Length: 234
Image (tube, rainbow, N blue to C red):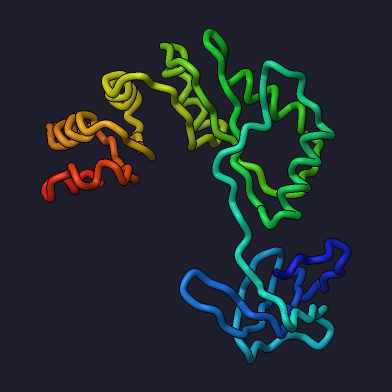
């Protein structure tokens, strides 16, 4: 697998930083092919065997190497409000992630009961305001218990702070229905382990107006129990 040396010098052509990677095998989800890669401003803009580049464009020979998409860690818990935030340790976490092939992590700010998620997010932003990380970080907010003030904050977090992912700990499907109805925010279940929950979701999706709750992944243990006409919710 190809790991880029961070000391590589990029060329500036037309105010764009360029790097040309040659000779490697490009690995996609469906096949592997020999291809060259042109990178501009950190983004892949062209792949193939006959890419026209400027003579002074820096080149990286990847012969004998596999060039693979970077990883995204969808669920990390590096930030814990019960402990002081260690800036240096946090930076090292992002460096270790990059060295392991992960270029984006989704970190979770846990909002305890009777706390303000907005205040915790602002505290996080202020703590790392001048910090440079080794990989990209996306923040999601986790609620240990949904309260009225949290419902009011969800819209503010989304519209003013760009938060579009929330982790909810709910013990009842009915609580989730109330949340979706109150906030007009779709909810996606990533795991279901009770048949009655699937039946309940199926009913509320067909009511008028519908409630936007979706199942994106069904437990293997339930597949044999689900009848054909219930797959409308998956």
